[in-house]
Length: 100
Image (tube, rainbow, N blue to C red; front, side, top):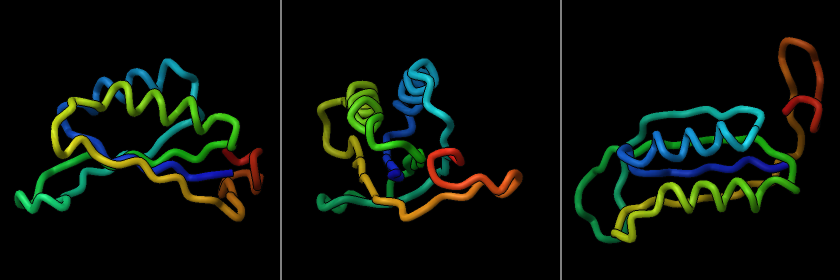
């Protein structure tokens, strides 16, 4: 299992969100964040997307995000893949892949 974190431009979020919904992912969490990259052009408001996924879906999810978030301009964002030791669904007590 992995956690995919993507930070994208606000104006590209709707495109990314719609494409992810069409893909059938299990769900995602979205947060408005601020930050700056190595160009130091001041704090910019971005959208952070967090998705829990099985490893076999990672390449598909990353490609969907890249295709729909890309503008070819500085500040398009980042995608990080983090290994998860375990995941628990609070309501049912399910764990691991069953909790995704």
